[in-house]
Length: 256
Image: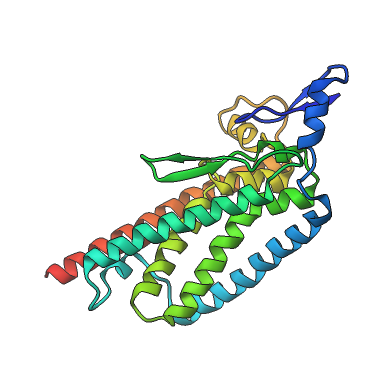
C-alpha cells in the first residue's frame, strides 16, 4: 500500500508495485532538511505562542483596531489606503513564504504560490505534507499564522494604542488573521483543523454528516469540525461588523 499525492487533491491509497512512482513519493514524504524539521517546528510553535500571548495582552490593554483605523486623525485618507494595500500585500507574501520554506520537500524546489488577482488571495499547495510526520507538518501548516501573529504583535507594540500607521497595520493584520481562521472556507483554518484531526477529508465528511449523506456514524472529530465551521460563520459575521460596519459608522460620524 502506498500513499499517492497529486497537486490540489487529497492523498489517496494506491496498490502499485515499487517503481518510479514510489521513488518519487519517497522524496516528497520527507522535508528538505529532516535534521532541522524539529527545530523549525519548535521555532514556529514558539513564535506562535509568544506572539499570541503578546498580542492578546496588548489588545486587552489598548483595545482592538477596527475599520475606523483607516480614518486616523491627521492622516490623509490616500496615505491610509496605500498603507492598507502595502500591509495586505507584504503580509500575504510573508505568510505564503513561511508556508513555502517550511513545506519544501527533499529534492524538490520551493512550492509555488498561486495568486488570485480578483480576490487578492495567495495560496500555496502543501498537499504533499500530508504524508509527513506530525511535527514537520505542523511547521508547514502553522508557519504562516506564526508570521501573521508576529507582525501583529510588532505593529501593536509600535502603535501603543495610538491611532496612526502602526495601528492601521495592526488592524489589517488582525483582519487577515481572522479571515484565515474560517474553517468553512478554503483557508488556513480548514487545513489546520484537518491537520489537528489528522484527517485531510474531515471537513468534507462533516459536511456529508450535515447533509445526511455520510456513510456510517459520525465520529467526535466530525462533530468538532462542524462546531468549528459554525464558529467560523460567527467569526465571519463579527469581521463584517468589526471592520466593515465600524468603518461605515465612523464615516457617517465624520460626515455628520
